[in-house]
Image 1 (tube, rainbow, N blue to C red):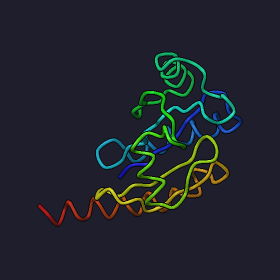
Image 2: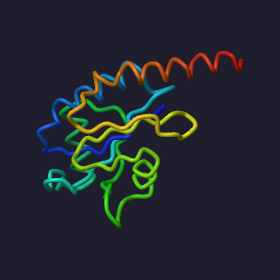
Image 3: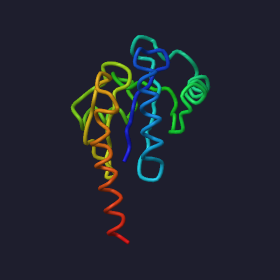
Image 4: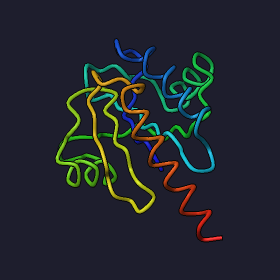
Amino acid sequence: VSLVVNVASQCGFTDQHYQALQQLQRDLGPHHFNVLAFPCNQFGQQEPDSNKEIESFARRTYSVSFPMFSKIAVTGTGAHPAFKYLTQTSGKEPTWNFWKYLVAPDGKVVGAWDPTVSVDEIKPQITALVRKLILQKREDL
């Protein structure tokens, strides 16, 4: 189970989301769940730094332990293929930083939320999906 998020270091949502995302990673990861963070500078130029500086900031400031990928575009003609897929399959395109896409183990997008929806609000859906995965793996044994 993955929660794919376009992150930014200088956004009004940065503190709240990074703290909640790291707590979610601590609570549920890394065997059955991971937050996948994709820095993006498309909205308000709020992620201007280099990949190394972004990762250093997130790890130093929020003790982030989830994967941090290279800075990408998430919308428009230059959007990364992963975000093109997330947008097409969910019907929801990011319009700001900290869009969250919940992806099931089979690769299907099962939810998409804008930054005004907190991680805590969607945690029950994530937990249910992780629980389902664990039970399925147990049955497979």
